[in-house]
Image (tube, rainbow, N blue to C red):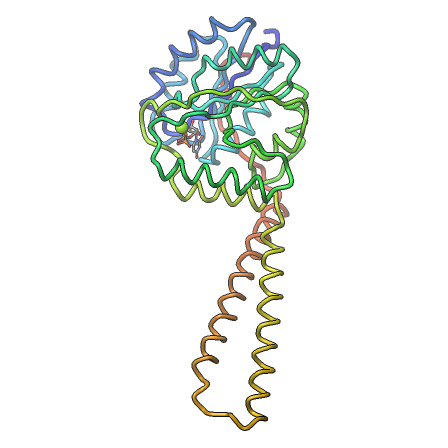
Length: 312
Ligand code: UDP
Ligand code: MG
């Protein structure tokens, strides 16, 4: 088999209800693209019948490949595996739940042919998402932009097309706490945006509960910014100055003979406040240390249990 022009990566985690609709959409997409294409489904340790459904679809679709993980390694790891195994000259990431309309890829391919090396989708509308998710996403992208030193595009998710050159550059970045949106911004290259309306999840529920979302959010901030550490330092400094002033005031009060025993309230307040600040600061430092520990262990980012379909 000659190398395909396009590789389409789709992470799949417990997406059984979506798959029967995904395949016809992919058939249409493959037929509509202007060059040969492969579709790589990365089964991120699904506990439902996703892998079986994909395996059943393989024989009739020579362009389809399945990469099954040994367990759930997470969305960002699945995309990383996709980038590692993709053969195409242009690589596109897509959500399995049809939230990112496959048709937008045609638009992205056009910009790629114009010479852009990274073409990312920017969500103009988000249908069917809660006001909470919309607000937190809105606030997060803006906070992240002001904290991080990379030029992170606002409202861009993982729906993007990358040229082979950019993919090879990204593959060299092997850090553990992966925040691909940040890493893609970091590698540079000629980038451009394609606006699109984000559709509603087709079926099933979101695989990004609040816990995973917070983890991704923290990974993003902590791996691209040392501002939190600086905040810790400034906070520590301000509190130390205040405590020194309070100490001096206590001595003056004592020497002046205005001393009364009922000063314990302010003392208790001060002790609690300083204790609280110390714990916060240590927590922030701990977050960085735990990430350093993860990097030092240097475990693989994912483990592949099955590689089927396509040329494999
Ligand atoms: N996903 C994954 N592993 C996970 C969580 C999610 O591979 O641990 C996949 C999921 O199957 C989907 C994509 O990542 O294709 C995005 O997840 P989802 O649509 O649930 O996120 P949302 O769009 O709600 O942010
Ligand atoms: Mg989704």
